[in-house]
Length: 185
Image 1 (cartoon, one colour):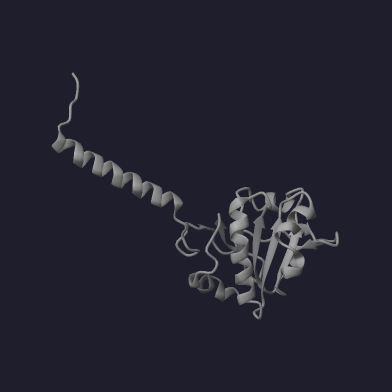
Image 2: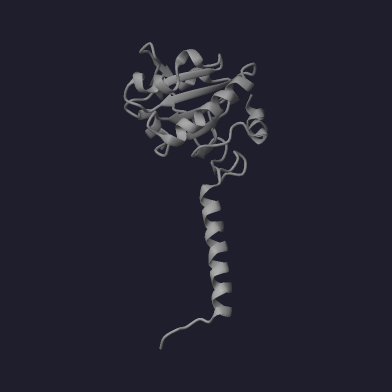
């Protein structure tokens, strides 16, 4: 048995398929805001920053994340070869500049193997006073946080507890981002 559609059946079918296809494409390519994005929420105190967790500063010294205890901070994993990271970094820097007078840090952790690659994207001299750039070439810190899909950002509270995690690029210039982060300043 062979199906045949006449003109009155074809037009509605094609219209429905076209609308469905456009809706699917819109959903895929839409960049949601920080608040509306499906955050991978973790309950407060579900994970404490590893006291031994560290990355490497540009001067070669190890920096422990416990250094930041007593203030909230964003832990932002990225890489120079990651296209979404490159697109997002200017927004994260703009956020850091907006909140630089607050007791809130932005900790950039590059998973590149060499400082040269990271510095091409994020020169240390361009960082506001509340931002820190670290290198995690062996990806020990990234592995500790199960961070493999860059960019990934963790909100850490003053007691070094992970509050929430965002996977993928976010719209950090959205006013909603400040609303979400403000309680941790």
